[in-house]
Picture 1 (cartoon, rainbow, N blue to C red):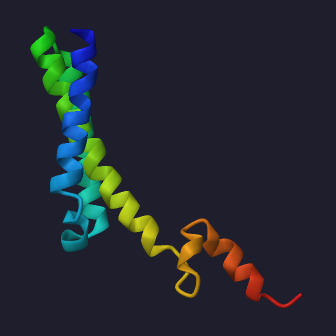
Picture 2: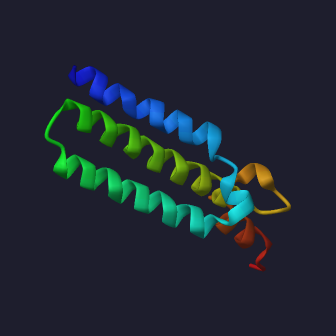
Length: 104
């Protein structure tokens, strides 16, 4: 049963990634991330109050929903930080791309 409790997290994570992945494009990154943090806090409260396996399963699904929601919004936010002239560098290349243009 312990494996099932760990495995249901993936159900919540995939459910959130597939259903609310583009929500931050419509509502904005910050509101979606705030909602994801509230869902994660709710899962922590459910874990804290859980008195049986059923509540642990619910807490893990809610935890997956919160993580999946945050992951989608954060990934979209990182893509926005990619340098426009060299998008293949990704968000970490933005700093290096600026220094390449600086005079020596």
